[in-house]
Length: 155
Image: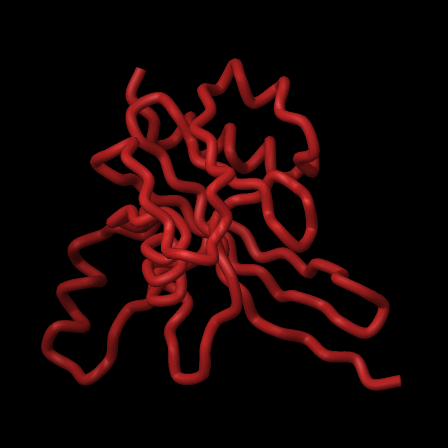
């Protein structure tokens, strides 16, 4: 038996007082937007690409390490400070298949959704109060969606 582990990136997208989740076509669960990190793609690039494909939204990723001193030090070098994920989760898809999921938080300027053809159109914006009533969502998804709202939401 060969075990496969793939890197994925997921993003909890917040606008004003709501967070976006979608009904995943394959897993039939309410999840954040995301997918596999492609070859030669940075995790934050995957988040931006997946958000655009799955929702049509332009997002701004949250940088927990937003410290101008450290960021400024990289400007003079050939290095780049990558955005640190908020959480990293090992997800068992099957006994032979795992996802190493890098979870990010982001904001957007619109509720208007326009997923690409072939993507799920079952996308929903939830307030903090509505999250407790979401069906088919793993408990960790609700906790992280709530955390994203508390951190980035406008009340």
